[in-house]
Image: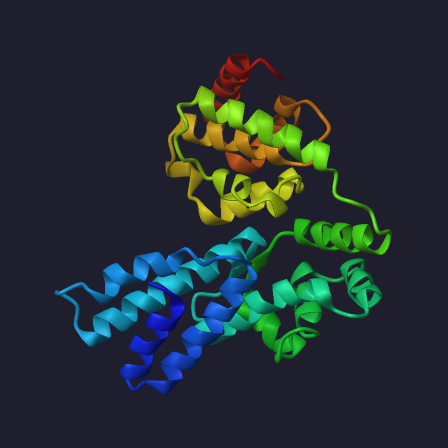
Length: 276
């Protein structure tokens, strides 16, 4: 199935507002190179137990879940009552800010001595149809690390620096070795490994997205340890992997016992791949 076939189904429902909403969301997902979701739509459209409304609800839930995931990757948590259409525009704005013509304006906003919610809202007001005040009312939480990411991307572009291909290759090699050591099971950090543009980002940014998206208190110690190790391997840190993780363990858990167990498990995993 392709998007054209999905859109034809949507058009046949006669709900033009819904068609426009999904069409806009698909445009944004394509910018982020998220296209595989279409393959899952066939199961939704052919489910014999679904009414037309069930089908529409499932399509929307699937696509809204992807939009939420992208927002989480940017460490952005919106209020529960935010309209889906607003989520789409904000997600699009996060992408479009990289192409904003006057990057000095955005860099200056990043460095303002104002709350992070206000700063991000001010930036998004430049690339969305919304005013700063309205955007502030939608945001529940934002991690300051997003501003470091924005500044780094802009500064690299302004200074015309090239991507460190060798560094990324080394990280890919180490990550592949790490994955082999754990039996190539799927873990959260794989979402970055599968997209080369997401490799070599700040560890704090990866961690913030992970903590926003996962309830780590309910996760197994070994799973947490594997994810933290995977994120650290892929990150831009130049320190020892274990040191990088240890500095952030207090963000993962305040339970000293769990913290010690995570640390111990990571040490064992590092031993299997022969690094520290």
